[in-house]
Amino acid sequence: MNNLVYKWPSPDMDLWKISNKDYSVLVKWSHDCFADYKKLSYRFYSCGYTTFIKVSSDMNNHVLSDKWFLTGIFLVRHSLELGIKALLCRVLPQKRDIQNAFKECCHDVSLLLEKYFDSGGTVPCQVDTYKNENTIFLIQPNRGNIPPRFGHFF
Image 1 (cartoon, rainbow, N blue to C red):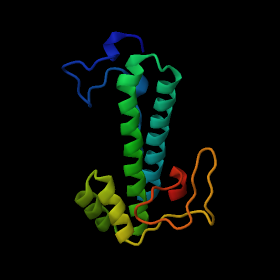
Image 2: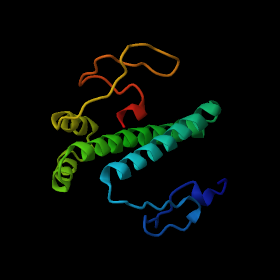
Image 3: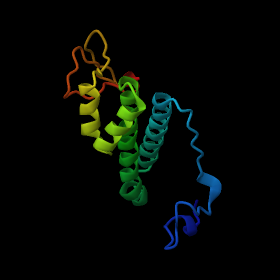
Image 4: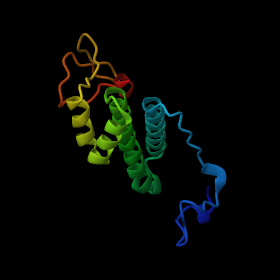
């Protein structure tokens, strides 16, 4: 990936005309909205996490810290959006309700989360509150709390 051809977008770049197939991804929908959005959510989170690991591995590399860091933030933020959309697929009764919720909230994570709670969704939590090196578990989550670990939503 040291080739400068792939470092910067070219003026004629188009999402449908990808010349470098090394990083192509095929997304297949199973028509199980919850499972599909959950899988995408975990994949975006994994990419974001991997990006942060790469950035933190070389703190003196300004290309990584200046450019890749924001990419990592976007990927993790998008994983949260997809995760909440997966949860909405689980609590909304019909496909039309899901489509309306997605259209109404668009990419606004706070609106999506509010819609999830308004639709009867809850945040699972541990029985007790304690802190370990990576995680804080909550006894009584409320609308202001962030999920303790990403995987606990599912």
